[in-house]
Image 1 (cartoon, rainbow, N blue to C red):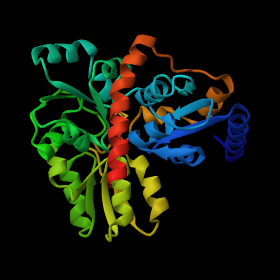
Image 2 (spheres, protein in one colour):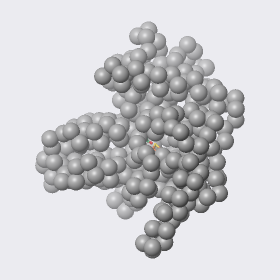
Image 3 (tube, rainbow, N blue to C red):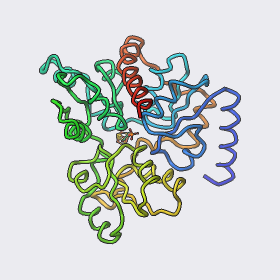
Image 4 (cartoon, protein in one colour):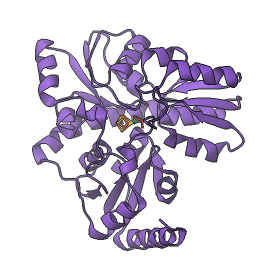
Length: 319
Ligand code: 13P
Ligand code: SF4
């Protein structure tokens, strides 16, 4: 797209947004230009919190479907738009309701904690939701005698299990992006950049987590690079977050962790990257595609998400 066309599209987006009282919420894995036109950029937890408390009539979600669905569940009276309905999530797709149902039935009496990266249907089957920002705290907030099923991310689930020492059965799902990082390639980089700190999202596999200097959600990684006294970071999560890192501390060096296959660029989330400026413009203009959720599922999914929001709010106040 030419620069002039892009400028025109951006000014049209701003005009329509104001006219329709719409806001754009963008995840850190969106492209830089989209992050820059958004009203709010954040991780899954912050975006859910923003979706639940704003004065807009329309929320355009620059992210993936489970995030837009979460916004709709938290703000059902608002119109929630997703510029491309194919913006899914391999992790959410890895958890089918029938498979979770089987696991629950085989292990009765366990509290079902589901990661926000799930469909509305899976959320409706869960007792409480968590994000990568608060997974450890959510588990720790449950009474010690409670036994848990954690779905669907096996890496985050095992990380949480190690951090909390709780009785947790972990569902066998994964994110294709976060399982792409190569320990060997990261260590080669570390050899070249001796002072670099390796910072890792908990959706990464154990060998990658084992060489990490710091593990955290996208928001936590951002905060770490902001407050840390180091100068160079190898970043093992989707590289979209590096845009915000550079904005906070432009003098520091951020190196995207390389994937196992150096030719594929598959450390980028292809679902997130389906959202483009042009699609955002068309979506705002036409007010579609719109997120619609079956009412019974929506109501059932509200409870576990609200439970997470309440605990997160309490934790924020007690810090
Ligand atoms: P965050 O909870 O860090 O936003 O992660 C969302 C996600 O999709 C990670 O792949
Ligand atoms: Fe889903 Fe992975 Fe993309 Fe996150 S990075 S949205 S978990 S596919």
